[in-house]
Length: 121
Image (cartoon, rainbow, N blue to C red; front, side, top):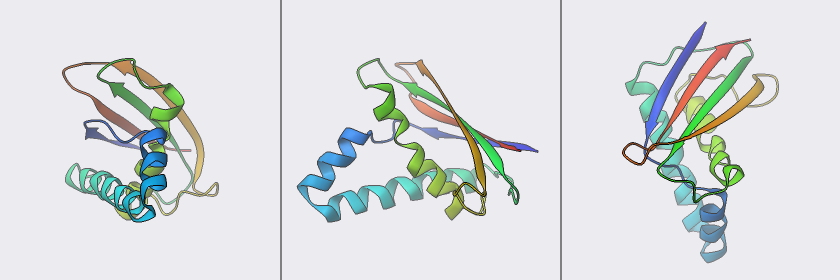
């Protein structure tokens, strides 16, 4: 079985999260909660199926430009995986449930987004 969702816009990078953490730990916690809820809401609105067994998750990170380092962009998979768990799409995000992750990157100045594909292993 395969399912997926699209999260419109950019998610925060590792640098943005670290800056928030250094400024005020409550600010970073609020960022994580907000972005996790954003992914959860997208998964629920788009009717993502539930997966009980192990899955592989593919991420297509569509950025508005090439300014952010790819590893900083892909850090946001933490928000995505936590949001999928919060939505009930995944039973968990540990190695028992997620057995593979794949990242690809594109640029689209008009429509930055994250396209997520979940595939039963």
